[in-house]
Image (cartoon, rainbow, N blue to C red; front, top):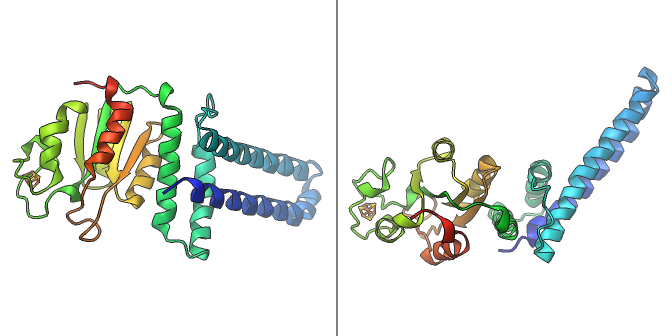
Length: 250
Ligand code: SF4
């Protein structure tokens, strides 16, 4: 999935946002004017500022994605634009009957692209690999949420291979059973960069929750349905390590 879908929907969302603001200005002008003459002008200036910040942010995101040049520097804050536009993009997706996961995947692709483009500015001394609990074989008796090394490496799930080959490639590998645990792990570990594995929905919220720590997202595979014996394509993990793993602790 590419960032294009999310960016196109974001521009449509921005135009809707713009039209809403224009309509709002038009509708409330007479009321504000009856209170004081300055109030409509103040409201107009605030509206124009909002349009400039969000439109400018979206333009920078789009140009950065297309040119692969770090145009976000020093304005590395994509959050305002994304936070305002994401609900409208989600609503648009519903109206246009686009599956939410398609939009989320495109957002994750945009996020990963921006991380790659801004890579030179990201420290990778401390690298956290954050995994979902559903990667563990459902009948495994071992408790790996406290410590991944409690895994017996029986080979029934990917946790064993992560234990054998990847422990020394990350500063920390942690398994989260939910969003609040994931947030706590991130707060405790304070990594420079997170490589997170999860479903599209959890990745999207995780990327936004972890901000300003950059989070590179890898979606899990779900051959048995959601949240059950999910899988991780280790090639994708290797790719992420090639990109970010050179300077991390061993
Ligand atoms: S590889 Fe580890 S976590 Fe997976 S089923 Fe075996 S012991 Fe359990």
